[in-house]
Length: 168
Image (cartoon, rainbow, N blue to C red):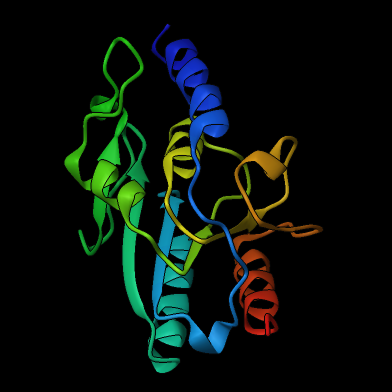
């Protein structure tokens, strides 16, 4: 029931969000957001390596992770939200998640291979200029740059970085 309310609210946000979207040159980008669903240690370390690569490029990075029930939060390194932050009426109540969505990132990287409805809601609400992630059905409503033909997290990260850095 909560997810049905959430999906309705998400579709409304897709239509109402008037944030300025633009593919600015990667070299000019200063702020980067990363959002993902916690799955396993391998994904956690892949995200940490990606963060290090962005730091070398002198980007200011903010990370938010979705922590599913009964999943370990490795290192407690990043801000997170969970199913507990979804009200009965489909509202996300996490201050971390809401603040993240309101941040005007130059780039927002969504690092999941399958769409997560709670993260899609934040993407629909997002003020980020350029949202990048894996292509999925309906991705055009949530992403400015959708990466095709990836079958693992590392390939997705590599593809997102490759195409983002090619933006001139």
